[in-house]
Image (cartoon, rainbow, N blue to C red; front, side, top):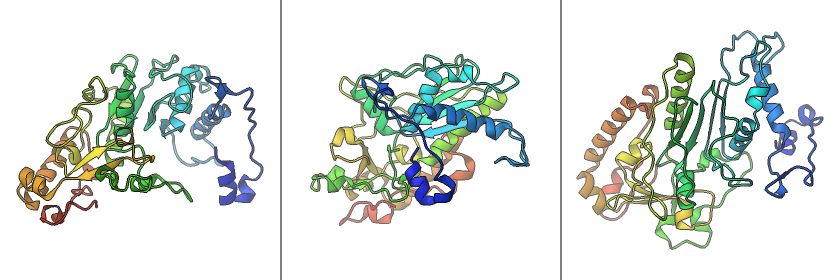
Length: 337
């Protein structure tokens, strides 16, 4: 918890808050634990507060039926630890039911910051789903490091989903006052793979996954099992025509591509952003003929993604091709939208 930032935002409200931390006692892998141990208890108490009917509570006037964890990046480790240490089974509602009805975490390789790179919590519950969503970045990380992912199962309720064409960090994810250097600002200004970040709307496939998890909880209909990425001895397999990674959950900008999507683990651009390289106009014309042909293919891919549950119907209308008509001009490649 960044209490200092919270105090800058609203000092009178957050000035009294504090937390105890002892780097000599709170260890992970022989080093100070970067994850505040009290965070698990705070999360559990928040879940109980959300579920408790109270005229003074945050959900006053609402009948809360389910509480989900939807946690991303380093905070995903907190919830992995929560399950790993058996908190789900220990901390329950007064009627014995779970405080939390499903867990979705993503964009983080467990153990990457500190600790063991395990992929299944030892305390994995039998009564609620545990869903991990990997961007392309975590997918490539685990492939390079030869970390095997567990198979999906319905008992226990476990899913791993590798979503291609989504980065570890989007520009829209930056917090207030946060600045991250772009890939071409780290000494790789001449590398064509380090010129642009990919910022396609990752929230669209992620929202579809959250919707599928909710349906699993409400109706008992299991989430789909999405294809896994095809690995090689040193990483992942890519289509030689488009450099798209083979396999995984594939949104329309991957099935009808206009860019090569790379991760920093492959390019070494040196930033937390992942980067993309535009197809040449000649390649775009060879693949699609014209912008109209590209747009038609992209629209068809969007409809197919809705049918496959990769994009929600209500999100499809807002999805536009990431490359414009200039992608087919002889003098330039596509400009990211």
